Image (cartoon, rainbow, N blue to C red; front, side, top):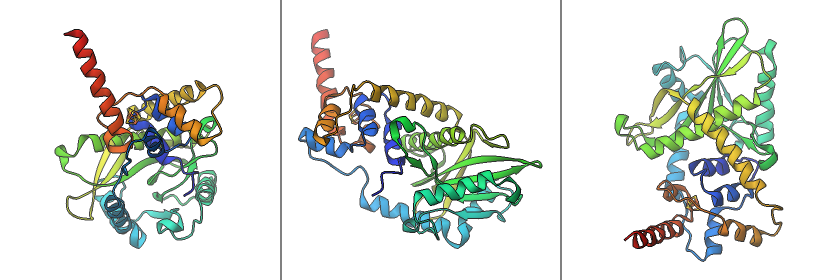
Length: 304
Ligand code: SF4
């Protein structure tokens, strides 16, 4: 699998940016399941194959027929004025996209649209998986990020506003939607707001909206449920702070070892900061949960 797409790594990091081991795993691109194996812990996959397949089926239904089901749902939710938006599908061919063979092609195609002021039709555009350069290239190298959806709204004669959309297959249960799922999804969307703003910093006619939308599923179906007007500014700032922490963690190692085994040792010995969300994404969760529990018991004994 290509490591150019740094989404997995940044998603992992933003779910627990306080953990030094997590930051180092992301910065040195060493998966936590390898660190867990190095610790001698049995590993488990963070996501079941069933969940991955369910996500793929949901996305395919959403994007087929020129993203008809997405356009209808976005128009109904008021994100776009009408279903007649232009869909630009930049998904890779291996993800059911029509023509983009790799991330560089997807990034160049989106950059061409961003830079081609005279050629843009003055109509709402819906970009599927438009790729952009990832922030923090000093730590993440030439990584690329591909948000699920970017809607480009024409504003006035010569301005455009971009709006981020994040797709997840878990059900929208209104006020009873899983709060940890929502928090993780908003963090991811906030990262894209930050990355897009960074990539467009010198652009004068294209800006990024602080609000975005989430595309979830109606419980038990493959139909989309849109949560519009999600304020992502706070999450974008958290992503910016997180990236700064990632840099600090990386800078704290004098010289990152070349040898994979030594990299695993460095991560294994780094400080951790266990939190409940770790269970949903990190292969070391059992190990860190045990460590956190025994630390708490020791502290309670000392206090007693
Ligand atoms: S499970 Fe442990 S190593 Fe993984 S993010 Fe949480 S505290 Fe860090």
